[in-house]
Image (tube, rainbow, N blue to C red; front, top):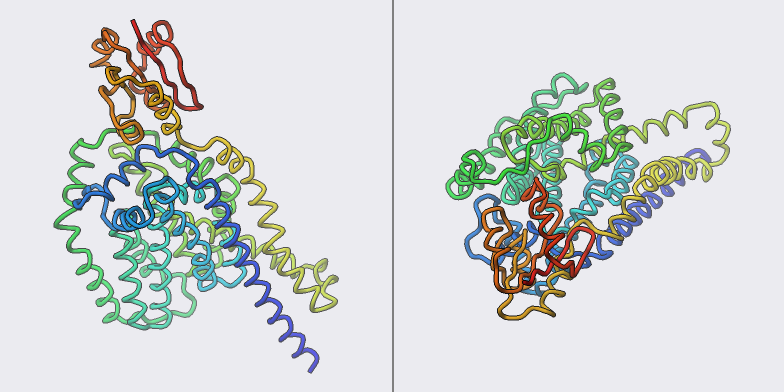
Length: 477
């Protein structure tokens, strides 16, 4: 009787504690994403998103769903930096409880809690939750599509197949990287026979309905957006950003974006999953590995940016959480831990605090603090808003405005006469009027590799404004 009461008490305490920790993760995630949400100036891609959201016809390079959502926010709440970034922020916050639900289904409650803290504290995910782009939205739809597909295979229910197809469609209308979700599912279905101890039968009719719903719902994109997007990517219309080596691409992803500690934990978690033949975990390995491998092979002939892989971050978080919980379970089984299991309350405290709070916050949370401090203190973008405000306060109607970034200066200043380039440099330096030159470090190095323009700016112009990544020069005869 006493043992039964102890078990019930332990389950009750665990349930309450897990919900408290999940709520804490959501609160932390929300604070970190709302903090200084509108502080930074827009950069090029954000302005392109806003421009697209205002148009009736959307750029075929990207699907329209994120722009439609952004348009609703802009028309309802205004066009400030805070409002424009609000959709990405809300999707970023929503990822925290969703990854808990996904992790709890794949592994268990503790793994879901740990993963929710990892996402809540991830500097990479926090940054893109504060960008007027579609990548956190893609992440949410990806998690939901995979979650409902897993439920469909285990419960063999047509409703879950349809829900999975719907969220996969929403992901596909958000970003074309959603095509990887289909690849992940197809490969996972083929690996189930090798890694699933107790094989579950897949209803072929339900699976056919799933693919049918997906194909029918995505047909419009194949006639409108996708052909044009492929032509741009393969036809050379898209300007090149440079093609890093595969090794550098992967190294930068693991060291700068995901982080070395989380990368190490996720790799070790993946190894442990393979050794244990955990079929649910294999889904995560495919979730992380297929997009990474594909983009790594594409970088030599196609523009690929690391943030295209942001939607795979939940896979790394869940792989790491699996490893962390397994380590704690081994500690629980050791003689040292058995000596501490004297009372139920103490046992619950050890299980919960050690596995969820102590290991996660110490090993992962504190590890992220220096980057978060730098991000909130200095930001990631050139301060075009401040630079344009300065120029506007001193600009005469007959002055000439030149910039390395036409779109951003047009947005904040309302006018640009020339884009700084080698072709029009002669005309700029021979101008008989005052010339304002707004220069950002990211572009000037690409435009002026031999430092010809840089030297001319230094010796012939006056530096009027300087930020960490942007300079404003004034040229006058």
